[in-house]
Every structure is written in C-alpha cells, then in structure tokens.
Image 1 (tube, rainbow, N blue to C red):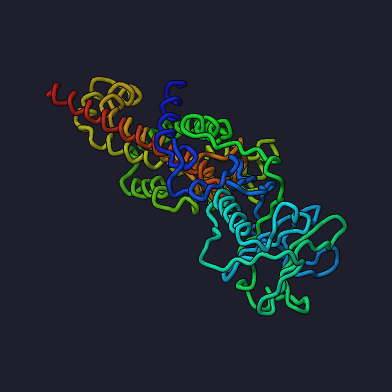
Image 2 (cartoon, helix red, strand yellow):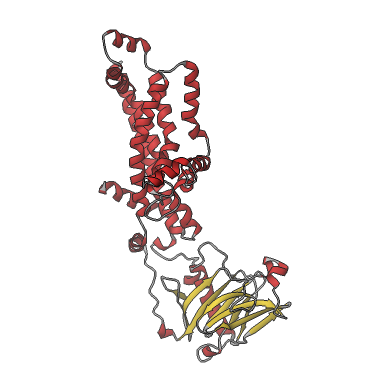
Length: 446
C-alpha cells in the first residue's frame, strides 16, 4: 500500500501543472521581468532600486453595501484597524492608488519614477495572489493620489474612512453620498481593492519561492490528505457490498419468470442511467430526517444523512449496476445444458453457483468489480446530496476537487485531479491485462 501511494504521489509530482513547481522562473513572469521580488506567501514585494517596499499585502475581492455602525458610507471594503494602508482600487476604466501621508518619507507619490516602481510592485503582488480572478494591467490609466478622496464622473472614492471606532474602510459612493451601486448596477462597483503597508526596504524579508522538489515537498506538507483516506475507506467498504449484492441480484434475477426478469432488470439498472444528483435526491427523500426510515435510524442512534455511512450508500447505489450487468451477462453466457448436467449429477444450486458458475464467469465478474470500484471512486453528485461536504468525514476526492476549485485553490484541485487520473489509469490497465490473460488462457485451453 505504501509503495502504491508513493507511485501516486510521484506521478502527481510529474503531472501537476503548478507554477511554483517549475525549476526556474518563467521568462514571462511579471515579477521576474520587472525586477520585483515577491515573497513566497505573496504578501510582500521589493523592487530593485526602490526606496520602499510593500508589506502585509491583501486583496479584497468583494465589498459590502450595508450600513456600517448605523450609517451608510457607500459600497465599502474593510481596510483594517489603521488608516496608514496603501489602497489600490481597480475598475474597468482606471486604477486609483491612494498613498497615505504617513509614507511620504519613503515614497513621493508625485514622482513618475516612484509611481512606476509602485505600479510594478502592485502588479507583481496582484498577479501572485489572483487565484483565477481579474488581474490589473497596463491597458487602463493609473492615478496616484495622497488625498483622502478622489472623484471621477460623479463617483467618489474615499480612503481611510473611520466609520466605526478603530475600523477603517475604502468607500465608493456618489458625490452626495448616495448609493450608486444599487442605482446603476455592478458596473459602478470596483473589480476589487488591494491593500498594503509602505515600509522601508530593510523592514521586509523576501523569502524566494521554493522550486522543483522542494516546492513539491512544501506543497505536500500543506495538503490535507483526509479526502484520500475517506475515498479509499468509502470505496473499500462499498465494493464489498457491491460485489455481494451484484452477484446475488444477477443470480436471482435469472431464476424468476421472464416477465418479472424485465422489471427486475430495469430496477437494478436504472441508477446507471439516472443522473447522480437524481439518485442523491431520491435517497435523501428516502433516508432524510423527514422520512419514516430516516427517523427510525435516528431513533436507534444511527443517523445516516450527512454521515460517513451515507458516502458508502451513495457509492453502492451508483456503482451497483456495473457489477450487476457484468455478472448477469456472464451468467447468461453459460451453457444451460452444462448446468442441467450438473443438476442430474445431484449437485445443489449452491454447489453449482460456487463450483461452476463463479469460476467460469470470473473474468467478467472481476472486470465488473474493478469498474464498480472505479465508479465508486469517482462518485460526486449523489455523495454531495446525501453525505454533504464535511472535511475528514464525508469529503471524498471528487468533492475536494470541486470545493478547492471554488475556493481558488487551483493547485490542490489539480493535485487531486491527477490522483484520480492515476487511479483511473491503473484501473483501465488492470482490466486490459486481465482481459489479455483470460484470452491467452482460453486459447491455450482450446
């Protein structure tokens, strides 16, 4: 098991396209080409020859249009507990940079050379912390100001607004303080706002970003591997139920009348053609807290919904048809005369099943088992509906991929994607090797 995991992690290291794993900086990397050094945490930057540095960088993607401390100050972004922050407001038409007066000793906001250095630092930090959002660029004018407010086309940008005691904001409103965001729509709202402190160059320590295997080691150290263990545990338990239930359903569906066989086959197969979210919704209705069955499980102290057993149930329901169809197809392909001959020799149905049907159908059953395992491994929609997203409990790898991507953690989403791809490759390779082995065996027997 340890060796297999090592292979998976090595494959992820080779395939995961994360920028920080590169051995050398890209020639097109903005920070490298502009002579700006950015910290590994993307919270500090220092330009070559600059008399200042930026520290405590943060990016506010969205603001709030609600009242602050009982008063409306405009569409506001929380700045911090002091008014000495540099604030960069990015809009579709221009970028406004407010340089606090407290930074005058380090930076002359009216000096074009200082403006260029500040612009390069902000651009480098912005690109390093973007996480898939909009990036500031050179295609719009940049305005630098030390004033507490700046106006353009009836829109006023206010900086360091103390709306609550010890809490400062950047606010966007009309000239008369009116709400322009609700009145005109999202086009009046800034794309985002960046904040930073202007400090002396020796006040920041720019630790270069790790590269190569060191970067991958740091990445692995920060990864939460609970989705892997939840997935393996869920799939391992589910495949036991899938194997037993699939064989039982395939065997007994062939022993009932033909008309009943069609109905049973449709019932056993329908989870394979229904969308996983529909399966999850139906299970939620059946096992939810408002259903009689769900309340019964709660009464006995074994609630199912949004628990780890729910992940197993979801995996069993969606993967069971693959096992059932493969097993039934294998049983239907057996020579009925051979089975009748065994009965004339006095063999019981149990002995015929275990001594004759299973060995002769084993290649198809094994393929169905592996395919069911792979299907259960990649289950997402039904699991999310029935089990939810609880880290370390119900968060499987597919769910982790979705929520890491939604949170902007592209590197972790790619990592788990590669892990699933490697698992899928191993499954397909196993099926191909098993089929080739079975074909050779049959040719040799023939």
